[in-house]
Structures are given as structure tokens and as C-alpha cells.
Image (cartoon, rainbow, N blue to C red):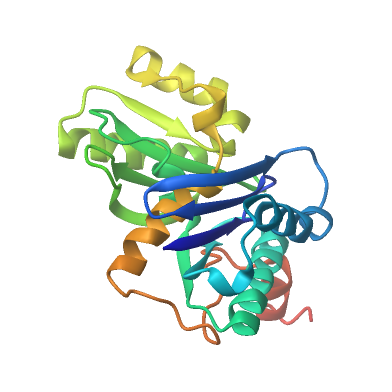
Length: 238
């Protein structure tokens, strides 16, 4: 079973190819170029390096949000285009869940947190004590302070003595979080901190084994928070 995973929900762009339980090729870029410049060349390079035609894929996976409104649209358009052209199943995965899958079999509470701009973050808490993460509570768009309170709630509920935060939201508000939790907060190395297409592909493989596919035509981004254009439309400015 070959799974092609495409992630462009954050400033990171990533593409990975998995064969059954093995990671065959992964490419990762966090260099500030737009996803419209980098994503499809990365897809082409991954498939070329693996010597695999699109027609031999079993399914295509993509992160559906939360994240950058533009990045989500670019990634979803690319994944949908490939899936429809090659007549392959499509699998949509939460960005926060894919990020949580960077860590497995951990006794720590895992918080995944993305910088949503305007003083807000996207975040969720996960139990990562098994091979695949289990979300605790809902995905949120909130202030960093409100996310701290959400994490404290799940620390109390689960009885965990420590936590780890993954994502660029942690990088943006690192000092705030380290001051708040002190030694309870464990710091992860760079290769686990940002979204990985390989983690997305691993979650997608599990869904494929369960025949849990998304509708190729109806799948849409999960923004959580309205875009600026939507906000302006709602108040009659557009």
C-alpha cells in the first residue's frame, strides 16, 4: 500500500511517500517560499525519486486544518487534483492530530499549538501514550492564556505530571509557556517540533486500512476561525 502525504497547512511544506509501514521518501521545507512555488515540485520529486507513477498510489493524504488559509487551500487543491486525475481515494487529516503523531508512547500530555496570528493560537491536547494520538477535548482558536487553561484542565483530568508542546505556536510564545509551566514543560528537539508529512501519512495509512476515506468533492478546509474576508462579510463590510 503506497500513501502519498501532502502538508502545507503551516509555513512548513512537506511531502512523504509511505509503503505499508515503511517511510520511503520525505521532503521538508521551512525556508519562507510560498507553497504555490514549492509544493508540486516537491510532489514530483518524491514520486520521481521513488520511481513510482501516480497510478500505483493507494491513496493521497492531506492536512485539512487548522492552519494558514492560503496554505490549506493550496494543499487541498493539489491533493484533490491528483486524487481526481488518478482516480485515487483522498484522506483528510487534522493538522493538530498529525502534529501530535510526532510523538508516541509518551507519558507526557501533548499539546499541539499553531500560531494563528492576531494574538491567537490554534490548539488541542492529546493522549500520546499509544502508537496513535487520541484527542482530548476540542480543537480551539483562542488566546495563548486560554490555551494554558485548557492544558491545565487536561493535566488535572489525566493526572499527568508533565507536558510537551509541539508546533510553531510554541516557538512564537515560548517564553510565555516556559514561564507559566516551568519544569513541567519538556522541550522537544527540532525534528519533532514542526509538522511532518511522514506523520500525516502514518495516520492516513490507518484510515486506509479501515476504509475510512474522505469525499474527494466535498472535503474542505477546517479553518476553526473565520478568515478576515469572512469576518468582514459578516459585519457587512464586503
